[in-house]
Image (cartoon, rainbow, N blue to C red; front, side, top):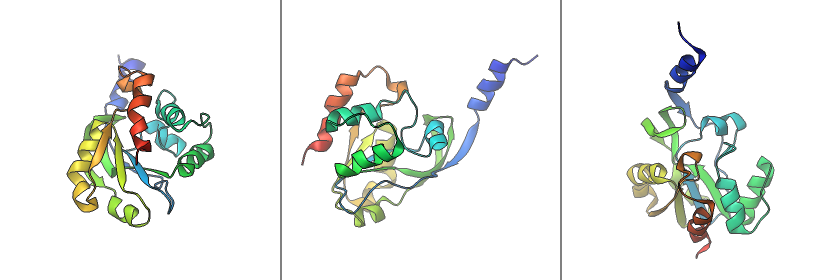
Length: 175
């Protein structure tokens, strides 16, 4: 007899082809680009970046930018654009198990160089080791910009405390 728990585990461990379903957030005045790897299931469900309620991305950025914590997607967009920050992911598509970046395979990178041509972006930061590794492998040559690796704000990276995340992310403010 199969229990519900076993069935759930089986579904979660299924490799799925994921395609990025929402556009990059940027405007012509964007100067900084923050890159994740690929949207998580919760983010895809919400239709915007860092949608998991336990992900600390929005708390960290609100702290670093000295802004109130944005509650809606529109507020999140407005906060980033006000500070000339663009947001996207390294990958357009891949196969992945759940939200596990370590399971990413069969990647198709986003065309980051084309995004850069439409903006003033000269600094790129990756929000985690996997995004950084993927950027270096698939995008750095075409952009000509070395990315800086920031710690992941994912709930899976709970060993890194909120204060340290905010300290590390302050580098996005430097010129």
